Length: 90
Image 1 (cartoon, one colour):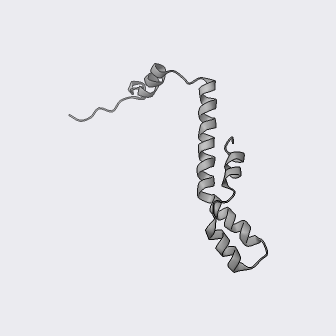
Image 2 (cartoon, rainbow, N blue to C red):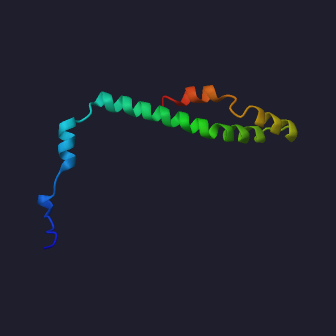
Image 3 (cartoon, rainbow, N blue to C red):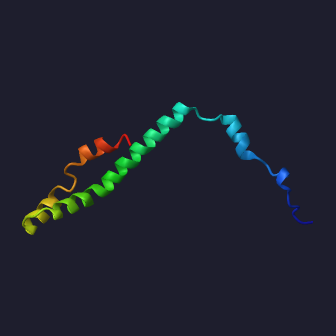
């Protein structure tokens, strides 16, 4: 009165029946979904890391530190539009 183990040939194949019922995606669907996923990924990355890249670039420039820090905290997302526009199609 225990559980009888199934042989590999007796295991249910739910994934193959689901895939057969839904059908494989076409090449166009895969292309557009990949393009959209890449654009969303790049946009989220830029939104999260752009202030850090801006700070790094501004700190590497020569100039007075006080003015630099004041400018950094005033506009951390300055230049975000071109960064997203250039990288979103990736």
